[in-house]
Amino acid sequence: FWQREEAESRRAASVEAPDIRAYLSAPSETLRVAPLALAHPVEMVQTLEVLLPSDWPDEHSKEVVEDPHFRFVREVDSQGSHLLITDRYTSLADHVPADAVPAYAEKLEEARGKLGYQLYQYDDAIAQTPVTATSMPPAVLFFSALVLVICSWLAVWVYRYDPAPDPRPADPRLTGIGGWLVLPLLGLLLQPIVTLVTMATNLDAYSEPLWSSLTVVGGSAYDSWWIWALLFDLASSLALLILVPLLLVLFLKRRSSVPHLYISLLLWILASNLISLWATGQIEGFALDVRKELQADAVRSVFSTLIWASYFVVSVRVRSTFTRRRGESAAMIDSPPSLPTATTA
Image (cartoon, rainbow, N blue to C red; front, side, top):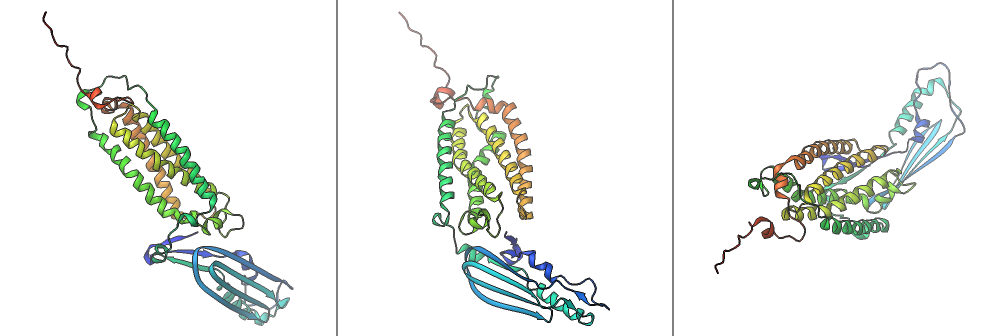
């Protein structure tokens, strides 16, 4: 719905219902020797209702385009977060004389120019209207709470997951977080920050009235796929916020479960990116620039998964480092066994 305009530091949205445009189409030829037949009598009223994400400047306007052969009226009524646009076309004759067709075509063009409506949301205005939990619909809050409960239960299972270390030969000289293994550690440190920034950017989509306009039948930007795309993105982000910090703790503890869990994380991120790309592809009129970003994310996930999953499978450093079992201390694993002392009789 909203398109980013970086040069103007704003987001723009174009609102138009195209049905009435058919009655305002210009004739293919304006220089005629025969009259132009018109459908008559015709009266069409088109009402477009928009629920805006925040209060908008009040506007009450009426524009009229009148010709001996038709009358077009546009009324705009904006109050608070509610915008109502009413277009009315009324035919006044069943034909246009040949010599009046050029003037008739000019009036049609004038009326067509009044179709459509532009909305602008500037960055400073967006910053002044933060989304809070109270502006979110109860269904979104309930869904978020349910996801958090499920992820918390899953986190307990992940922490208790305690497979045996890789049985292949290890190299004591490569024990410890170093070399290429530092890069996955940095990724785990940065992932929660990236997730929080992404959630903050998309938060207004989960607030009223924008949520209703996207997900409720009859909304100004309704598409049945919006609710699935938004809820999946929310669930994926909440899961990352809970499980990635836990994996970071296990990583620093050098638990034997880390290789399996890290590969699972890579596969989950890849799957979520592909699902988001597919789901948004079902939404008619989805922003092209955002879709390109999702495509780039999916491609990066494919390469990242191939590279780092392979690394965690074949790396000697990985199998030499992640050897600790749950409940075992670092001293128990890393300290050499004490030699028995000799006693004399």
